[in-house]
Length: 289
Image 1 (cartoon, rainbow, N blue to C red):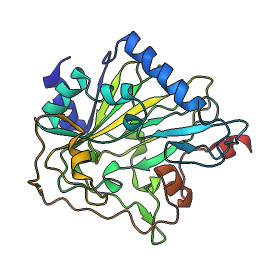
Image 2: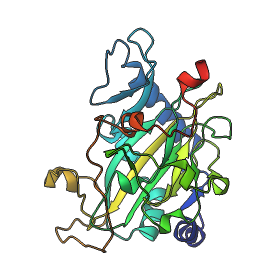
Image 3: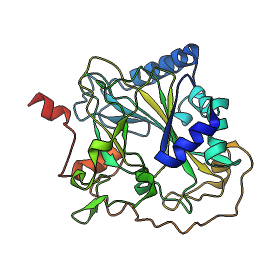
Image 4: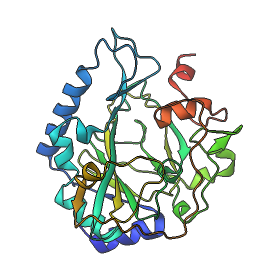
């Protein structure tokens, strides 16, 4: 793994891609855990603390859109967050002291896996400084046909785009303001990983293919980057240190933030984007109709 090149890509483009971070055996184990967790959604009437559900979900035909906080759901997810190859890259782009801020598995299932409109993660997770990075591990082969994440190179250098429309936070950017021709799809084989800056603009389309596209996301922050919108249980928060040492000294870097409030819908980005009228990507309902 060429850490110098990857750190340079992250700095210049706002993202980088690494092949073979996970071995085939590690990928298989994560797939097995994911399948077992998803199977437990059968009979579920509505989303809960673990599952975000597709709009087309029914208790008899469960359709999971996201597993929330998988690091708290199964020990394998928690252990993978500390994978040495991930940690080595994080320390190059964030620093020696790194905390796991959040995690999720976005399922993007065949035929109906929901799109995500163009957005910047910083709009959702403002901190006292921007020493953050988001890792996305591919649990399946990702190609142009099954909804890869697409990044706009250099967009992490700013500005923070408007994610409010009609006075409400909708978690999406008006695509008319973006140079979408520049967007780069992040494809790769299962076990590959992308790492992106919290300001880089990205989105992904509906998965209309017959192929799975499950991705395990970990959001990381420097130990001295303090979340501005989430309450913190200090002992629990420090239990999520990935490497280095925790600190109660908070660093401010002068970043501008716009709080993701007020909202019309509670919950995940998928729920926030329901209020967005300028959608770019086709939805499952569009594909059916």
